[in-house]
Image (cartoon, rainbow, N blue to C red; front, side, top):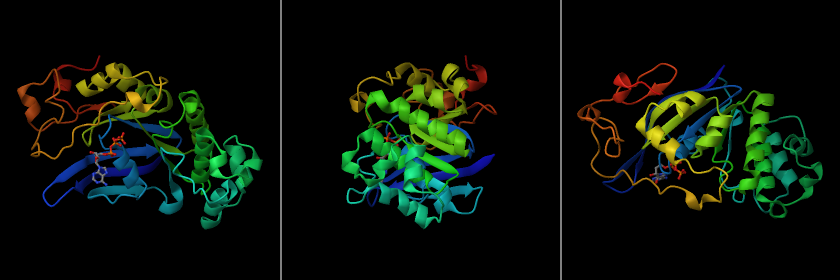
Length: 298
Ligand SMILES: Nc1ncnc2c1ncn2[C@@H]1O[C@H](COP(=O)(O)OP(=O)(O)OP(=O)(O)O)[C@@H](O)[C@H]1O
């Protein structure tokens, strides 16, 4: 069942009097209950801006976000990248978890929420600084679940955690998704976990979704040259820390590209037609590339 429908969503940041940055450019997709959708792409491609618009932390420039249910504040919750910044150090874990229960008038206790994320109930009396990064992220997940949301936005939920515990946290989100029938948006630059945990993958490049479809199709038979590049360059997901992240994409403040494929300057297969308006090909597995017509994925 569709939980959230995103239509023609765009965000342009005003950098100065003259400079504008199109961080998200006409993006449409749906999130379904009981399914994880991954949003992948290199740093600066606009993934977080999409998640933050869905969480109502950033106002869209245009487009529409429609929720199947009526209580947006309760039904859409977010887990952030940094578990050290997301919990107020002045309050106990119990307080952090009881607040959303009270605000959203939900039954249950902080201790029950802790058990749902495999932490001892006694942790309710502890303070955030007494917990490890992974334990804090479990608390952040428990807090997000307290209002019994329909949609969970997970923005790089494990990229700041120790490699050794990343899978545990992703498995936890996966279990909760099944148990609570949640629609999960998993924002990541890690293709391996995207393929493992997501039903569908959307690939972003410079604010646009250049490819989307069932996870295995997108990863095993990528149709867009950019997805192929990402798949070939994919770092070992369990290696070291974030030091090996790709360089941020150069900012897009130059003269706007009127039409055509934004990847064409970097694309080894670019042809003249890439400068024209690019149609999206395919129904379930969609690819925004002119070559798609003559050269099917594979
Ligand atoms: N508040 C803001 N003001 C101006 N520019 C912004 C703002 N927020 C994001 N941007 C810019 O928008 C672009 C997209 O950023 P965004 O954080 O969405 O990318 P991302 O794909 O999530 O990258 P990362 O993986 O590094 O988080 C970047 O060029 C970024 O510098």
